[in-house]
Length: 380
Image 1 (cartoon, one colour):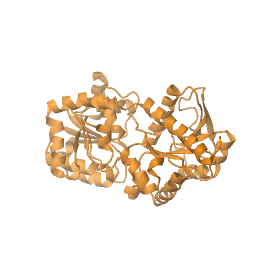
Image 2 (cartoon, one colour; image 1 turned 135 degrees about the vertical axis):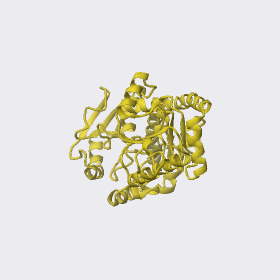
Image 3 (cartoon, one colour; image 1 turned 30 degrees about the vertical axis):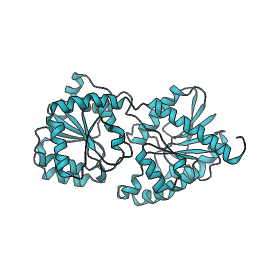
Image 4 (cartoon, helix red, strand yellow; image 1 turned 180 degrees about the vertical axis):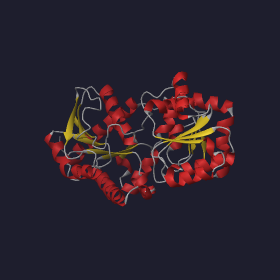
């Protein structure tokens, strides 16, 4: 079978979730699928950087580049023709958008539907585009793959997809996440001026990530450990900075912005605990990365996170100040709890594997082709 992957959303060097997903999925598919042929559609400027082997072929799409609007237009007006010209039998739409004019079966991948829960995180143009186009794509897709049961319910609710046409395929933490050496941990601590004990949070500072709530809870708890925040600026950056300025112990709060992959692994490894107070997650890859590095995890009990962490994390309701503060105190001060969470975290993270993800996606693609054949009453 000749399978197409719409990877136009992938950008070299970017660390967004969709970029990690596309890179890890393609790498895993090359390991697990020795039968099918794959064509990966990439934007101009992104070719040659996904580690594609001889059985996988890149198709470079011109006039796309790094422009989101250009990509969206090209996906809708030109991609379908290119897919058909290449003889693709089924298309995986890794960025969630299915071309309206596509004549071959398609599988839509949805990691979260944040745009319906927190539309303020998006520009008006992007918000309107996604809220209109994602439901259209669900109608055009033979099957929609969601990254969690929580997201699957959202797909049915917001996109109008029938539940029987949805499937959950879990993700995993980034390949290569494992405890860093003591030397690297100390080097990164010195580089950023960190103390020996700190809580770590890795998240873009969007409002729903609730980083301002974390700073406020940290201030109320009067902890002796530091607090280190890593991630890109988002819609809640102003509120975060305001919370830090008003916090007791603000001299122990470090905002590092984006760091390299190697530095991030060292920060996970050296942390006293990892805290994710998010009000909304479609999956939650960072909690698995922390677990892979042996970092005890305390995280929100909302949305998809309980599915991902299982019994390997301390769960709390971030909307409850008392529960939030208690969780921070326990992860900071209870050594026995941290040792238990470290071991259970290793075991929980090991349950998620990119090869399993790849096999789930391959099975979804086969199911989409068979479903289209059955519904049309003819062989494709």
